[in-house]
Amino acid sequence: MFCSGNYRRFSTQGLLLLALLGLMIIMSFSSPYFMKWDNLRNILDQSTLNILVGVGMTMVICAGGIDLSVGAVAALAGAVMGLAMHAGYSAYLAIAAGLMVAVLSGLVNGGLTAYLRITPFIVTLASLSIIRGLTLIITGAIPISSFPSTFTGLGSGSLGIFPAPVVLTALVAAAGAVLLNLTPSGYYFQAMGGNEEALRRSGISVPRYKILVYVLSACCAGLAGLVLTARLNCADPTAGYMLEMDAIATAVLGGTSMRGGQGSMAGTVIAGLLLAVLRNGLTINSIASYYQQVLVGVIILAAVVISELRSKRVEEAAL
Image (cartoon, rainbow, N blue to C red; front, side, top):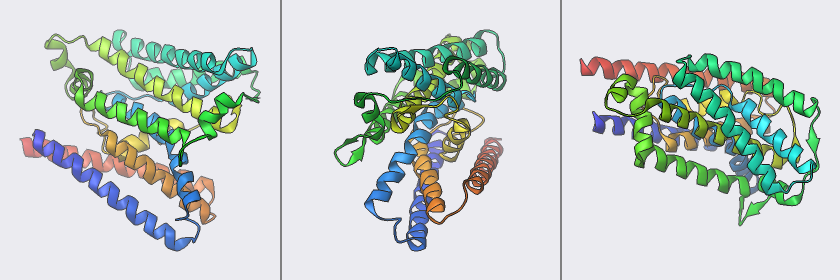
């Protein structure tokens, strides 16, 4: 089963890579500007938000949960960073404050899910509404702008030929891959999604790891809020709208099973790039953004259907 599971994972990643390359070839024929380095660099930059929240979402879904609050957490973290800098604190203390708020939201989501046994969908849906409201309250529903260059450089600066957010995202994705595949915590996340009761009976503290996975997801959302706020030089209380849908699309399209127990960080990264290429190509070809949103919804539905069909085939083969 382990070998067949790895085979399915690698085959999914291979198909995604082929789809990514094929889409890039199609877009290069549709527009002479697509393959220019400036545009490719822009695609990498655009993919960072999806991949950052997708890394956290991959771990949560793999552990048998869901986190609908990531977009709201990103907005709240960005707002806290902006308010802290306007209050006279350094960019580094502001970033720490924003990430601490994100961690707190993850602790609440994880605690309610782990100890009160409330369905993750309900918990995080309520968190989405509460956190959005709090963000509007603390900002007065007014965007906060004009931050120091030490902060904005994290969103619009470069390290060599790559944008700073791309480097940050690569480090987060690499750390996520190591955590999920090479550490006991990652093993417990996957076991939790596969059979939570069996994990509990083996003596593992399920609530501890359930809280941890939601904290990690919130941290990824907080980093997305950092990148978005620094890139725009503005903390918008409405930022991150529909980011949770993009995160789910990125994770599921990358091969993470909605039933839990299986996830791929490499697949999440490729899927994030695929969605960025798709949106960039459609924008270059003057396709309106609302059509793009419809297409993302179709992609989520198709990915879930394919995932469910594969799971059923595996169950039938096991019988």
